Length: 137
Image 1 (cartoon, one colour):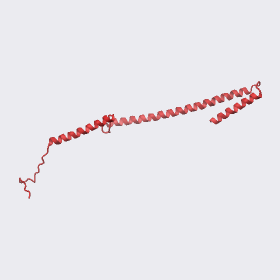
Image 2 (cartoon, one colour; image 1 turned 60 degrees about the vertical axis):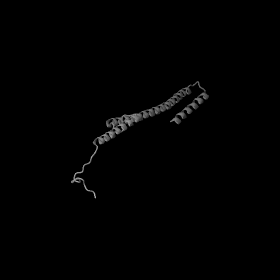
Image 3 (tube, rainbow, N blue to C red; image 1 turned 90 degrees about the vertical axis):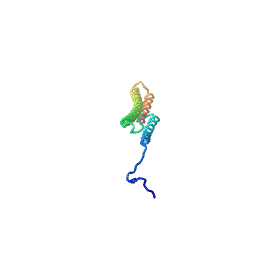
Image 4 (cartoon, one colour; image 1 turned 180 degrees about the vertical axis):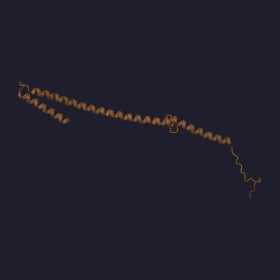
């Protein structure tokens, strides 16, 4: 059986520790964490790797990123609208040319010096232009 060397030994237990080693271990852990964070920033090429690095900067960055995406979407909408307008302009130019030629043909066909063959040719062209307009619409 084990007998305590000093009377009252069980009453007051003394734990010996190395305070300097504990402090060095804590400092080493902290520096290792900071080094890991610095390496993450370097490898990512960004100052903010996690929200803990700079919460305000991260929020601002996210706000600007969202705004950039909205501007990109608006730019796409403008490009689509421009394309649509150009298509409509081409369509209206074709219709305008056909209507101008139809007006010219109507005036030419009323000339009393024209033969019936010429008037028939004018009428045939007029009907073709009319079908171009109705087909395009």
